[in-house]
Image (cartoon, rainbow, N blue to C red; front, side, top):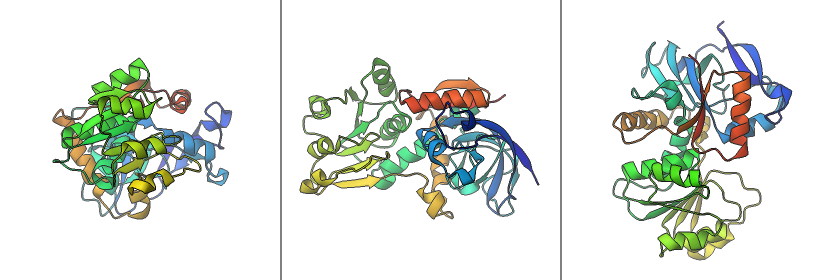
Amino acid sequence: MTSTTAIASLRPGDADAPDSFATVQLDLPPLGPHDLLVDVRAVSVNPVDGKVRSSFDPDQAPKVLGFDASGTVTAVGGAVTRFAVGDDVFYAGSIARPGTNAQLHVVDERVVGPKPASLSHADAAALPLTTITAWETLFDRLGLGAGSTGTILVVGGAGGVGSMIAQLARARTQLTVVATGARPESVAWATRMGAHHVVDHHDLVAAVRAVAPDGVDHVFSAFSAGNVEAYAELLPVHGAVVAIDDPVGLDLMPLKSKAQTWHWEFMFARPLHLPEDSSQHELLAEVARLVDAGQLRTTATVRFDGITEENLREAHRLVDAGTVVGKVVLSRG
C-alpha cells in the first residue's frame, strides 16, 4: 500500500492550537477506476480550510486539510481516460475525501483540469476552488453567457472568489462589474482584476447608486449578514443573489416584494452528489485555455516556500483574519 507524508489536524481548533497542524504518515487508499495519484507541488488556503479545521468531527482525526492543488500525475486508475502519468494538473477536489496538504494525493479525474502551461504550480494552485465557484455562480446559478449585459455587484471584490467573478465576467460576458472594497489595496486589486467600479461597502446602497443610479441586475455575495435589505433595494423585480457564505439566521423576506431569488453556490455540491458529472473537468480545461490565452490571470498574492506545518499555520492565520487580498499559496521545490 502506498503511503504519504501529510500535514493534518489532530483535533479541531484555531490556527494557533498545537494540534491544528502536525506532520503524519498516512496510508493512501487504492486508486478507484477514475482516480489519479498526484504528486502535489503547490496548494492554496481558502476560508473553507479554516472552517473545516475548527469544526471537524474528532473521530475523523488525523484530518488532512486542503482543497486547491497543482501537481503531476504519477499513477492512474483503470478507467481513467482524461490524463496520463506525467501530466500536470490542477483541481479543488472534494470535501468528502482527504485533503491536499500532502506529498501525494488521490483525486477523481472528473474534477481535475490540465494545469495552465503558462503558470507555475504555485500560481495555478491559487485558482481552482475560487474559479469553479465564480464560474458556477455566473454561468450555472445566474445563467449568464456571452451576450449577457447589465450590471453585477460583487460584494467581496478583493477576495479569491470576487477576483474571479470580475475576471470571468469581463472575459465571457458584457456585464458591467461593480465590486466592493474599502481599503486602498482592496480597491487597487479589484480594479486590476477587472472591476469597472469599486465602491465602499459601509453604505452600500448609496455607494452603488453613485456609479449605477438604476441599481444592479445581479449580486454575488461573500458577506450577506446585514446586506439583504440593500440587495433587495438595488435589484430589480426578479433579480437574483448568489451567496457563498454561512450567515446565521438570515432573513430573506425583504426579497419577496420584488419576487427576487436567493441562490446558494457550493462548489463541492457536484463532487458530493453528482460524482459522475465531469462539468468541473470541462470547466477547468476551459479556464486553463483562457489563462494561456491571456484572458485570465492568477490571483496568488502571498507565497510561502514549502508546504510545512509552520507555513500552513501562518497561512491559516492570514486567511482566518479575512483581510487577505487575492490568495495565499504554498509550494515545494
